[in-house]
Length: 315
Ligand SMILES: *[C@@H]1O[C@H](CO)[C@@H](O)[C@H](O)[C@H]1NC(C)=O
Ligand SMILES: *[C@@H]1O[C@H](CO)[C@@H](O)[C@H](O)[C@H]1NC(C)=O
Ligand SMILES: *[C@@H]1O[C@H](CO)[C@@H](O)[C@H](O)[C@H]1NC(C)=O
Ligand SMILES: *[C@@H]1O[C@H](CO)[C@@H](O)[C@H](O)[C@H]1NC(C)=O
Ligand SMILES: *[C@@H]1O[C@H](CO)[C@@H](O)[C@H](O)[C@H]1NC(C)=O
Ligand SMILES: *[C@@H]1O[C@H](CO)[C@@H](O)[C@H](O)[C@H]1NC(C)=O
Image 1: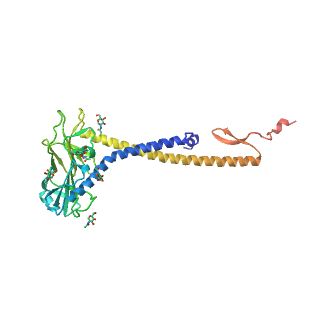
Image 2: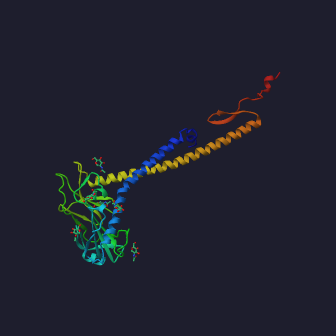
Image 3: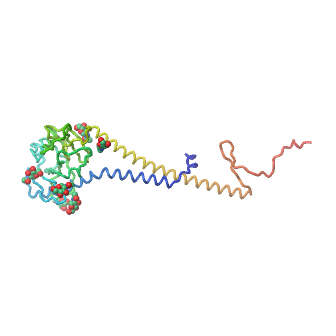
């Protein structure tokens, strides 16, 4: 360690530049990955607000369509449905637009009433839920559950919903026919924006045990890519990001340690030099380092009195 430090003649500025560059690259990479999901989350917040605005003296179990969406979201459709959680559990709700909600649904934490917000993202599907290598055959539909206690509330967290019986089914209308030879798949985006794939039933129906966003897709390329492969690919790229972040942080820590060590050694050497010079000044000698085996030791260059052996001069 010390040897490395002593012989380190690597220019520090270049290391610093490299580390900063790595830092920048990895940070921008991480940000790029999470940005599309945060846009989708922001859209959920906006659409919850518009859905709740449509609930003016609402009747329980009646579907209300939001009519006053901003013009920059034209093409998006939003509906709201307020239900008692007890009745939802006993009876379910049969056909909230494309969603068939079975009985047995348990809402957590307990609320007396809840609102289901329905979203149809229309031609905005690709923008908010980009899925590389896949083509959407239907718009992305969303189903999200919120507490109905305060209909003016914004930024509400989603409730947890768990089916104790049948799953929720999504019966898509007007599914575009998949290109010849390709297999359509259901895609589900969970609340974190992670995607998962499952099989389509009856040509237009997907099942889900969770809320989130749903659509039917086909693989773009001719070589079919299974959902397994994709999941693994995503995991791999996530791993890559963490490796980059980890090595950058590790590199920074090492850099700081090395700089500190180098500084210490430099100080120590300077102190030693000063002491040596002082000693040399005191004795009027110049000291040089001479190698004795592996270690270095100070040695006098000029010896004033040669050691003499008495017996040489013996008469
Ligand atoms: C409400 O919206 C849904 C889906 O967007 C649509 O099927 C339904 O016809 C609309 N209802 C009314 C009353 O406009
Ligand atoms: C739509 O416009 C409003 C202002 O009218 C803006 O606050 C909002 O961010 C815009 N939304 C999108 C999705 O562009
Ligand atoms: C979707 O269509 C509407 C018109 O119906 C348009 O104003 C909007 O820009 C389109 N959105 C996208 C992302 O193309
Ligand atoms: C999309 O397909 C291309 C070529 O088949 C592949 O290189 C790329 O990794 C795929 N992207 C994703 C996100 O799966
Ligand atoms: C409902 O939410 C709005 C917006 O957050 C807030 O101003 C209002 O005080 C809340 N009302 C109740 C009864 O909590
Ligand atoms: C994706 O779906 C499969 C099959 O239903 C399931 O085993 C897996 O746990 C799901 N993955 C995630 C991240 O939910």
